Length: 246
Ligand SMILES: Nc1ncnc2c1ncn2[C@@H]1O[C@H](COP(=O)(O)OP(=O)(O)O)[C@@H](O)[C@H]1O
Ligand SMILES: [Mg+2]
Image 1 (cartoon, rainbow, N blue to C red):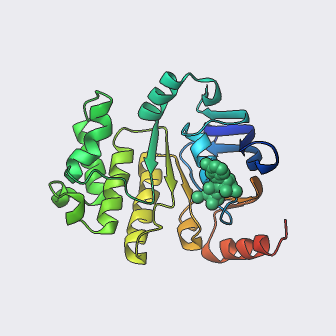
Image 2 (cartoon, rainbow, N blue to C red):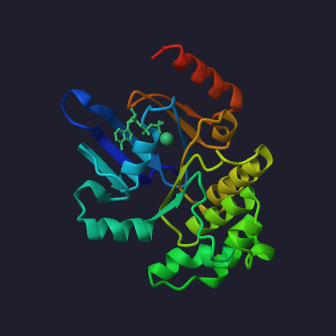
Image 3 (tube, protein in one colour):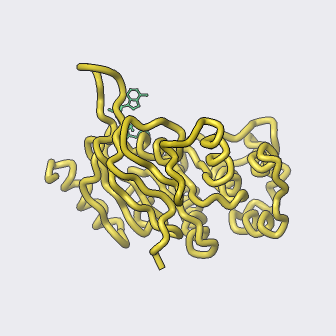
């Protein structure tokens, strides 16, 4: 267990801008994301969380260093191959649910597969739908669903293509605590029951406590990590880092 690596980086750097105005959003990141693990990325605003996720997911280019999804070095892929990799092997869940308002829940969930020209595996689709609890909401449009239900649609959409890794950027950031807990519980189940790999950016210690491992970023570097986090230990580390202990 835990030997397979779903994603990794080596001396990853991302610099925005040029000359004196340049910012090293990522300043030498080395990490391994184990397959079948739920990883949280935390850190103050501007510490590089979103940039790290975007570079890992092939949504943004890197300045130097390497980033792998499985065995594939995504920093060396041509745009066409990168697009295919994102489509076939990566799932995304964003803070703003990014659902298409004119499509039903079911159509939204199946859209990525339709775009890829793939047919859904009916048994898998049913399992995902029942796990997220959307069985009797499939015909509803996003504006007929609560925020929590919309985010569960986005989770189902990410899961249905069986990606090797799912990236979630503050997926519960816009939800009330009850809906947020539902979504987190569902993400946890998809790791435990389907062996899904998830990387989630969050600033919420309760959200982080649902994960297996928390990586703490500051100024574009990994400055701390915590396995089997609970709310209190995450809070303690956050306070320590904010007080400049790194
Ligand atoms: N597109 C961009 N252009 C210029 N600077 C950027 C861009 N995106 C992010 N940055 C800068 O990179 C740093 C890290 O940003 P970001 O990854 O969004 O942090 P976080 O998600 O932790 O809040 C910040 O200093 C931010 O201002
Ligand atoms: Mg961010």
